Length: 345
Ligand code: DOR
Ligand code: ZN
Image 1 (cartoon, rainbow, N blue to C red):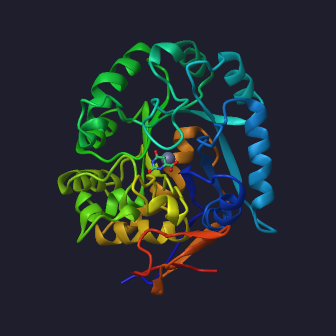
Image 2: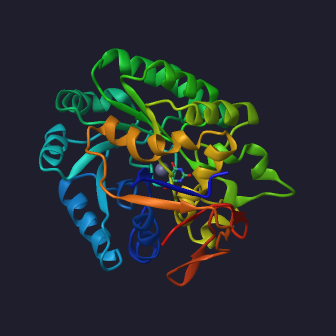
């Protein structure tokens, strides 16, 4: 049995770092584990232009601990009114790494999102021309569609036509949760990337209702039934070259989670690598962990692999019960539970 694992420094291709007191509390754990992270733009107001991204990037850098070696990769929040020239300018300046498509009202702070792909077609054409990835929250918002089917229906109704219309556009299907998404991503290795969160590898939808309503197990896309978890997990630990680490760590203060209308989001940043490594170990795939964590994403984005390494050791650790933030706190994923691995200092 292996007791230590050293891998190339990894990246997190999907994080919510928030702003203000929350940013001050959650920037450090992501920067401790990862060399780079794709930072989601769903602030309030959202990050929709170059100036907003530059100033958000400066706030992130200011929130990092002394001596950090972490690069935030910024994204542009697409709206019906996004200017293609602004997207091009941001990408060419190296401010924007990608654009994020939130279907309007699909999730947290998505009210300004896109109401129809037709509205952003000129933006997508520019992105295709310059090789800029489109990051997709792949769920339809049609209230007639059952919440557990929204991802599969999005693939059929939105993604398939989009890929046919723009054959060279690079697309990342974020936080995949279904057998349909896994099969689709596996079938298009050259054009589609996908991220997978730790929670969607570890829990199924029963966790949301285990003995009562469990707000800390609620995120979007919502966890699906067990057959879907197994299919996604098989794609990930089976070593698909176009699937990569993206935690979707999405902290909300405890009052916003424990509420009559609780926010979607699971905070996994403090122990992200350890959570994923348990999954790879259980599937007898530790030798495939480095590609998922440190190689596949950079290759898909066309970015260099990181220098340096991180080491994980087989030392049990308890996930903190609470993570202090401002005047309140966030409850981490698997709070109070014991994990088998720990990142070495
Ligand atoms: O659970 C989620 N939380 N899913 C998302 O898509 C957004 C995120 C957030 O920003 O809280
Ligand atoms: Zn997200």
